[in-house]
Structure formats: structure tokens, C-alpha cells
Length: 429
Image (cartoon, rainbow, N blue to C red; front, side, top):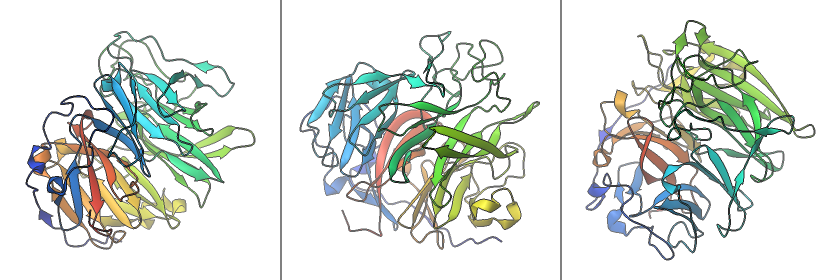
């Protein structure tokens, strides 16, 4: 069954939003820096308002009224949605931050150059965090062949990484790696204590096509990385999501069809808090041109939604899909809600709003967004051309003022800028 509604494609520009595609690190910022622009910086479409990143800093994550950002050699924390930045600290590797998360207890976990750091005191101090294996021993990054490419050990393509699991907040995410930044093993990580302890939830096997040869994405030569005892290997993790109805986590991976088998897998995992132990099962593995090469997994009212990143040989099996979790492996039971007809691997659903994006290298749009304000009944697409050719990703949940936070990547994954989007189902900014 396929349901598809009318698609509109419009472009609405604000007077000053046209500069949004400029240099993303124009200067430095600290205490009192203005990060919420005047109304003249806010542009709109029929479905949402949007605004560029504040000048001079990159807002990397947000939660409720808090925001974490960085500028040259500095990290910053705001408690008023970026209006002021009263907390900051020197951090020499700020430009290399590729992951951050504000935990419910106020802790901030962030990563740069293959290392994790935690602040528990509003950035007065921060300390390195060493990941633990299941047996309690240290899980240490490998020694890279090229120090400039240590691997994206902790980079996440998604912005939603925390959930309430039986009354306890859990942080669970997988690393999107082996594209730029160096070769890396592929893992799913978790923390159940506010980032104080980070452990391995799952380690994928050694991929013979992404060895550490010193290049940005790895290759067929060099050191093998990953769990030598796990035959399941992939290039990277696209998404990890939690279904409270089942008390289970789901993960999807990519990317290629290899002689040894597919790299696109769907996994289901359950966590035993009493034993601090995981059980994972590969539900299915499929080709790159299937709907299972995807991202944007969301669970709403007992249903699972996702968006296909299908590519490779035609025909492509693309679109936004929905089904009961028990029917994930049965395509005949899926409903295709909308087909943008391009690769689209990032999506968030909150309060009935679906926000997704185009992969710029595969899209006729420069910066393409897909939106539904009624949980998939009607749809629209917009090209925000003033941002240049960008692939939106890392959609964070709305802050306390109703703004989603979104990364804008050049190509499909190279860090560039960020922006904010506010659906028009909420009060006007």
C-alpha cells in the first residue's frame, strides 16, 4: 500500500538569511555573545521558520533550554537557548568536535579526534572518558597510521541519542565512520549513568574494505579494525533508536554490497539493567538499493518509521516507510507514506512533525528539506538554496522554544554549518 500526497516546492528568503552559507567559523564568541538573531534573520516557508547559525560559533547540540557550542579553541554552554553563553572553557581541538550530548543531569559528553570528554560542572572542568568493554577492561582506540586521521570513533549522524528507559536515562549511539577522518572500528556505545561511564553495547566485525591505510575512509590494505570474532561487518552505523513499547533498541547500518555479503543490516537489541548486559540479533541484511539501506528510525504510537537512503543499481526502493515493528522484515506489510525520489537518510519525528532531508550529492535541490506537520498525511519539500549545496543531518529534538537544531554538511558528511528550524504548528518566533 502506498500513500502519497501533493508535493510543493517553494523558496522563501529572508532579507539577511542569504548570508547563511558563508564561513562557519568567522570568529570567536564567549560570555554574552548573541546567538538568537533578530526577527529579520528569520526566514520562512509555508510549513516552518528557519534561521542560520549564530555568527562566530557552531551550536553543536541542545536540550530544553540548554545549548552546547564551540568556536576557535573554546567550548561554551548556554542556559537560555543561546541568548548568552556564561560558561566556557579553552579546548584546543574545538574545530574537531564531531559529537556532543547534553545529558538530563546537566553533564556534557563530547568527542574530538577519536577521544571522549565529560564535563559535570558546566564546563569549569572536563576530563577524558575511556570506553569500557563488557568485561570491564579498557577499550582503547587503535594507533592510527596517519595521526591526522585517527578515525571517527564517536561521530553520530543522528541528534537523538538519549531515551527514558524504565525510569533511567540511557545514551545509546553508533558511530558513522570510514568516510572522512580516518578508518575506525564500528561500534554501538551506551551510558546509563549520565556519561560517567561509557561502554560497548555492540562491536561489529573486521571489515576488509575499511582497513586503516592512513586515508580518510580506509581501504583494502592496512590494519584490520573491529571485533575479530564477529562475522557481521559494516562500514558504519546510520542510526540507533529505542522503542519503549518493546523496551528494545534498533540499529541500521551501511553501506555496500560485498562479495562476502551485505553491509546494510537491521539489528534489534535488548538491555538487561540488572546484569548490565546486551543481547543483539541481526534481523535482516539487504542490498544497497533496498529500503533497508536507510536512517531516521523513529517509533511513534507503536509504529516504526524510517526513510530510505537507497542507491546502487536501479531500481531504487526509496521513501518514508511505516509498519509495526514485528513486520520490519516483511515489505508487504509496509506503508510508503511519501517518496522524495532521492537518497534521504536523516529524519526526526516529534509532536506529529516529520522533518527529513535530501542527500545533496544525489538531489536536484541545493539544501532539500522534507516536512509533514500531520504525521505523514500531507507532505511538502523545500529547497533552501541560500545555504548552498548542503546535506542536513543530526536533527536534535526541539529546544524549549520549539526550534529543531540541524547540521548542514558539505557533500554528505563533511562538517560545514548548522541551522535552526521551527515548525508552524507552534507559536510564531
